[in-house]
Image 1 (spheres, rainbow, N blue to C red):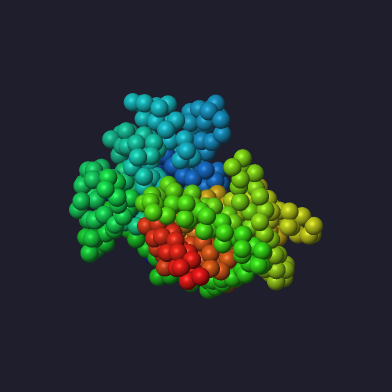
Image 2 (cartoon, rainbow, N blue to C red):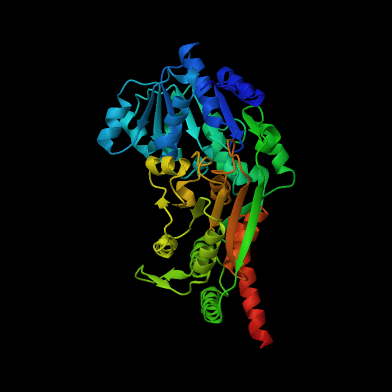
Length: 461
């Protein structure tokens, strides 16, 4: 296929060729992969400025996207793409094979750095989904930073650089410029641009940006970052969001209310920290979906209200393929059980073969956890309907997962259904995602609000 770049793509390619450090903060669907490969091809075979490129990507993207994209375009036929995946023996064989672009799962960054030690051979590194390096304490960040001085060209790709707020930017920009723009330490970055938002006497749990911090940070990094939005450059089909509220029956509502009260009041009177908030929130979201894990990790079914609403949505889809996102393992098991007696062709997103079957319209239902389908996968050829059976707090995963269908190449309007139990934790999450406030602080505040609501109900009796 012949590549005819849009003007914005041509601009990004030129910047990648001319600048050794660049962050491409391009919206989902704008073609980050082909832009990067085009620049790599020019640097490798026309200008002879690089010899060996490492791409670090989420596992499923590493398995499929980069090889598939390179094979699609005529002008990239010289590029040799080598996936570095599988067992350690397979990875060692792959990394020592002839090639131009070596694609590694981000989970193996530590292994690769330890393998080469001081003999790091990659003069260019591309981090696909730079936001997965937002945690400065993570091993993958620390290990890659150890060899940063051996990397002459580095590129960071992401559509969501700050999914949980500006605090996420420091580690990502540090890998690019080694602290020149936002400071050499996270402490200095926090002091310059943030103030504590949630804390007890000894610990700060969350930060909020100072007034005008957004503008100040953008001014600091604008020379090495390109930020483009899909709506400014592409004619995408309409995205239609639908919230299907699920009403619990009397027995299920009583069970949910009692469980919510017990879980929330268990921590009443104490400072709720992030760890306890996450545990509480997960338990309540499980109950919303219809089952909850017991202490021995067995799923205990509580109600079928959401399963029934899901069945109705599938029936109403009139045979159109549906991409279904679930949150917990027991969600998937109960959905599979629900669909077992139907004649629908059901698949689970676990392999490249399943991606191909979906895009060839050989599946009616494709089940996926948002963490396994969030980055880089092109699923728009297989359908235009999404059902969120269960939500989670990650705005990044939510946006990226929806973009598997609502992206360049989609020919139909994309309908995104959300199954939300009314007056529940489900609704808190949906509201947080809708106002793009899915942060730890929002999670904590919403739990405290529910505790107050329960207390007011008790006092009103």
